[in-house]
Length: 297
Length: 309
Image (cartoon, rainbow over all chains, first blue to last red; front, side):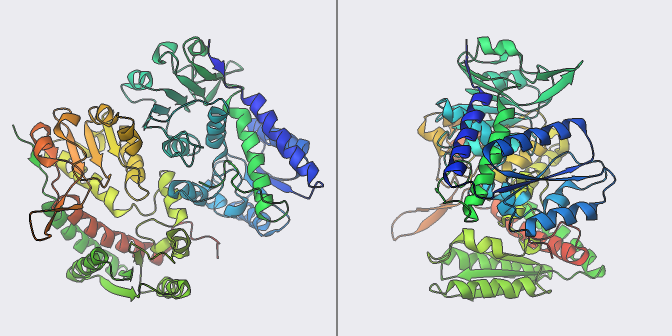
């Protein structure tokens, strides 16, 4: 039976250390802003989770909620104002936006120093170029979780199923780079579309398999080589139940397994707040401890 | 049966003819392309590249401006030069050549380029757009690799858009300006992409990966790294490496690729030689990006630089 890569436990550990740091520093004013457009049920829930986690560690939340009828100009104006406000340290633009609004143009208004979600082009570019910057939260969370459990990947193969710009692509970049992955540094990273022929065989070659697709139980247990690590990222809703991309029986074969829910998801929230606190350190609100994982390298 | 040896010079000639047409078209719509290079110090290869670009640009009728700065130049002066080029409406593409002297860091210099003129996509915002799969400029070397592949597939009766679907593309080398962008270009064509570098070599596993390749793109900067025993029959090989190695007495050198041509070619379906493969196409692509830049300047279609005006 696989070691469980428990994202909730690791999230709590990270949040507790951030809470303790802020408390020890005398609870300085650290402000985390979220921008939500419309009333998409899942988005409202995710923003709520992030707010609760922020408040739990002593970070002040500034929630901007625009109606679904907001124009592109309204949205960009709100984001530009938060970027310009020196009191705000982190900005999260909750996606997806209602149809008709341009995500890239809106995200371009986020000051890269406050892009704690690591999702703007500048942050992705800094990752690609290997220079300091906020790393995309889910990808960075997966890397942290693997490191926390001492998963060894140097000289091994990673397989990333999916080509999403928010998780799969940045994670592929991070896994390839020892500096960006806290030393994981895979020998080879395979990235492929879930519709590629040969998906099963590609997965069987993986010492690590990460699935970020959104197709229920796409990756089967017999696609996992015994002892491999598996991270299930994608989620789909089937008859009111949330199902991951990986058949849970893969846990019987895998050496380590990050389930869904309970694996990568909670890590996203933890890394979002870690990036926010790092942004506050960079802004001089907190003493900079330097070399924090998820920033730099 | 021997491999098809892909003639990069011929591909480059055709691309150049196309570029001529593109230049005419953008001029008639009022855009006015101009490429500027910035060379610091007297690195031989950088100056040779600058001369080549000037000849090419002038031959196709694109304005060219060479900025040359001394090796011991102050950082402020480099930034002033870039600022001047950023502000100059006659310049629509800026190329800062490597190597830079120790007092200048690429990390500091590149973000000062106007992203709309950053034809090699070294500004973080352009690198990020590339990483996200929505590139503004595709850097010239990986773009040329896939242009050559598309051209080869077309000439051998395959549809370039689907020729790589479900095929395994192995990319050796993870540089910012070649290997990493090549991953996205291959994914964009529906390939299964395996990306590896010296870690695989040190783990003794490089051949295991390269043998899986239907298409092998090598940009490792290591002469003769890939030998015949490391590839499968029928592979299509694109060799990006340009390495100067000693050739006989008298300190003479010759240029070789990362692929050991003599042992790999007999097994390959097709292979690019060095020299005469990817190199000639790269130069044309850079001027092409400058033309693209002039279109962006003219119509300001894109999201624009940070911070927004």
